[in-house]
Image (cartoon, rainbow, N blue to C red; front, side, top):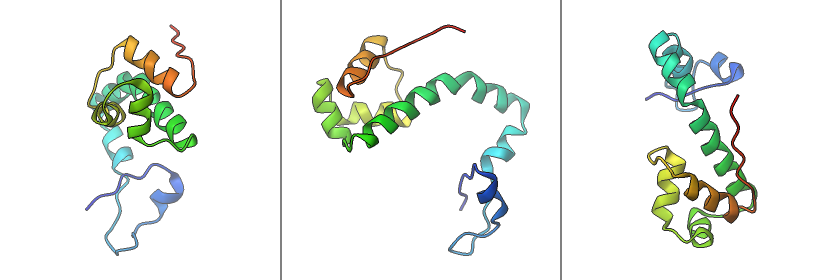
Length: 108
């Protein structure tokens, strides 16, 4: 059983509550250059999902409530938040609106 640990403080704690050793899986995987490149390329998608989840939680909204506001099914919100969905720009605009936000996209 592995737990993905990301903070240095957690990585120093070698044993979990259940007594199973913890492995900082993310740090180990990122040592693989090919994997690290893929993660870097997906960072914008991960960041978008993190922002959506954070905004939803900050507003104490369930996935079902956000889905009602957007006019979609809860399963679509779940797929979006899990990263199993490649949303259209139009869908992201609806999500932003349902969260009382504006979608802002920039090129760097």
